[in-house]
Length: 111
Image (cartoon, rainbow, N blue to C red; front, side, top):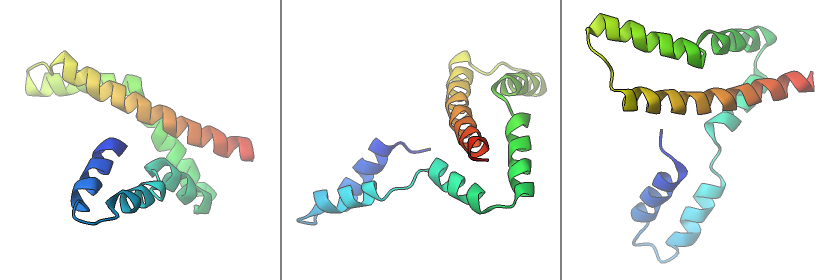
């Protein structure tokens, strides 16, 4: 997943020959809608059945389950995954998981 700085740099490079590139890039970035905002909007328009299914999927792949999956994969490949790679994946997933939790909690508070 690209972060905002990477996107900004790519847009800045793409519009490098435009005299008003700063304004163009800034306008694009300001209108950027995060995946989480899009997901929240999508869930707002979705049926209760789909929302319940989404929450069920969210509860299935927890950060602790991800750690179990690392162990299963290591057994299957008969090798270890380097700790720094597992940590990076796990930390990124936890951050994502927390943001999803926030969306779910906001939705449940509105009910």
